[in-house]
Length: 152
Image (cartoon, rainbow, N blue to C red):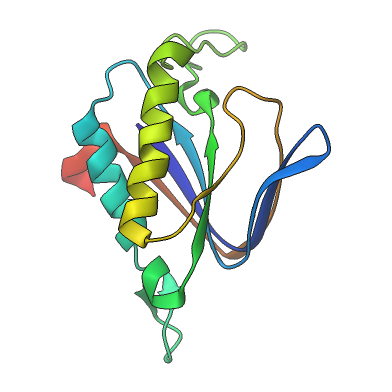
């Protein structure tokens, strides 16, 4: 799994001009799922996201987590995070999990994050043409890949 976390002061997702998810302070999380991903990957990544300390404390140091600031998550599925760009100019997406594999893991991520943060996770719609709006705060953007657990 790959996740791109963007610290935001506001983020929203629209599908067909209807808002499907919207948050104030927190994380916009773009989540890519590949065939090789497991429940262990999901649990590790959910813990990292929930506990990532990149929000300012009283000294304006990045020491606070989502729970510390009562922040929220807007979770967006994004298979293009597994784009293969080595050959040619048209990316390939063969590493991205097909919907029958990805949807259950995406839904499990929603449940896991909700349980860790004890709040509802805002979402897009899997596979839909989504329009994402955000105000990146900082900017602070963190990229995580469960295949690089030892490096995080």
